Image 1 (cartoon, rainbow, N blue to C red):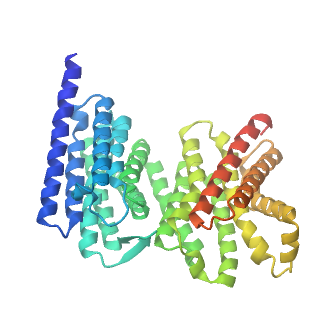
Image 2 (cartoon, one colour):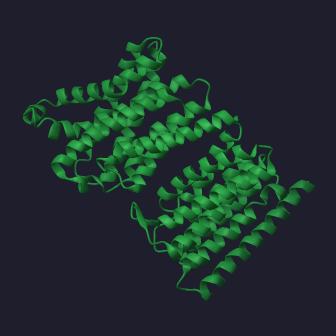
Length: 457
């Protein structure tokens, strides 16, 4: 009973502390009404530093959940009422105020018994983000666009160096990890988390940055020196491969390149070369299609959405990579992973085959009159170009069955996508099209999971 009373009293004390932080934020805003980012980041910094003490005073995650839900409610209500400008007084659309307490609760839930990882994750979210935003806002001259959100190179550089210190110093001072390994771990995570922050939209960095820090740090602090060095080589390889593939065509802006680099690194580091190979082949295939498109239409028509394009292309493969990494039965995810890539490219290639690839062969009219042949062509080519070689190299048993299963999953996703296209024919929205493709590919992947249970692979 005394423990519950202690938790309640502690929670009330922290609630009062956060109310005081809001009051301080409002006072800063009134003193500097033209610089609302300063008052917002003051609340962000003080709130994060306070949250770093949670594991030492609070034992139950339910207490943190109650605090998080309370402050989510405050953020939502004050935003609707148009008050608490120290938090909401930014012109861009942002849900960071809601993501912030959610991130603190979830990181506490996962890492409260690992104080170094908890402290480091919250420290990066709090200090790195605050200093990067303030320096970038005041001194940022080199801007880059992340789907309408202007960010600065100077801010990203500050974020990188501060993140390096926020990771290196706690590991060095609070663990027995060797100094060189601490430097390498901090360097790798700083590069990756800076990439996460650079492409985060609508305040989602308050979720992505601490979760990225937590997940990678949890994994890397368990690795021997040789594996840490291998992770560094994988990171350099992912950067080089991404730049080489896109350098001539210049398809992606900086934000798109960062997103592709992160996806490449995930496949290389979390799994193995056999998981990266189909992703590499998918990129080559995609660049081939884009090169044809650029030849006819020009580069500017494909450089609109960047991060969202890569997100919808890569979210399902990324989830499957993480799922495979988290279980010893990783091969159960391999064919669904392949189909998540082949299905995306089969759907995308439909447009290019019917409109551009067919031009030199005078086959445009033929494909328009024989949609079923176009359907089979796109499904077959995507499966053979992306999945055939990885399956032959990696699958030791029933490789033909595996190819057929991937092809069926690809065809299911392709068919569902164009069924939805007919139903939503009047909707002319690129993002809505990406979402339709996402749904159809998800169902195609589910089909592959079911087929694996029926057919021997």
